[in-house]
Length: 473
Image (tube, helix red, strand yellow):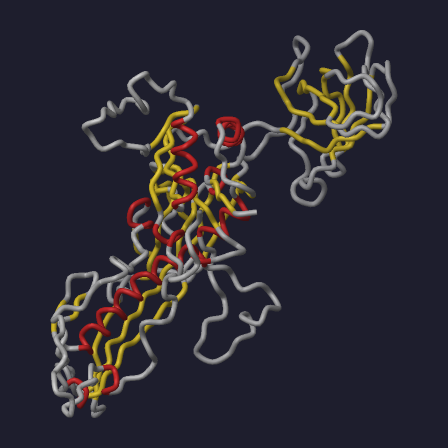
């Protein structure tokens, strides 16, 4: 058996781009013998339809007074190269290596100095021997990325090296007595990231005549507003829809690529875009593509990747429903099942209580807390996609220290936070104002009430290498 395709959920828009009296209930037929027996209150068949709350849970909002937000993130402390080649054959006491990583040439050269000791490990094997060598650097050409090394092993180079690619990292240095110090110094390796705020707008308009027509069904909205005026419901739904867009735009935004149609757009529409959470994590973070990780071995792979990143102790998983169930089933499978029935973890599930089949989190190397993310379940948003589906996002908890280019100093920031445009005289976090000559507005000769909404903001994803995006294959 399976869930039947019909009846399904309604995906038709609940709003129309008109402001007419046809938005009101008018289906009276006074030639009918009986008037309809009606319920006074509108039934909320889809529950709370809003999808926002994610950024409020994991981040913060703070002002910014610039069109550009820049910050610096620490680079690695130690030096490692993963694309080193040589033409030296086995048993030679010295060798010349060329470091082919992207740092060479043109972006400052290589961070290797004479006297440093290194470990060389074959990354690809052409011959039959695969052992590591340790050596001391005797000569360096930083511009070309060529170094000469002398091996510590009496047997010299122990691999068949023609065609091999080597990984190399520095583990120390060695100098003779009475010699001068290290030649050259290393500068801190910071990476500079930036993002631009985008301006979001919306508007609701209703004519003065339509405002004078009273509906006969009580309507309510998710923010608690209620009344018998349909235009009030539409205005509140516009506000709620705008609130959702403030969050979903920060999640889904992408920068306008050079040469793209968006970049060439004219008129009032924006043409620069912004770097949303999914875009940033997809490009600078960790991505799991395929079926949901539903076995401990899958999570071991995730933990091992996190070990190589920031090793944040606590992480929050925001998941769609199927992914949440997959984790519950995985954790339940670790239980030995007592003789009196299911007893997940610390739950005492006896026959007289409701059986709890869910988990709020688990520990596997790090602490993982999980939460359902309505945005990924909503069929009118990400939850209704066939392709391009996102099943979840891992967000590190807590805050990190970054150098804020605007403030000019180190600052504590949540890994995920929103910067909105503001100054002493203008706050563009969430602006709303009315224009027209109806509904309390009296600032123009327009026989209508227009409610305008505006915000200018960008999301900052700090330390994207600590995030995990779970995508459907």
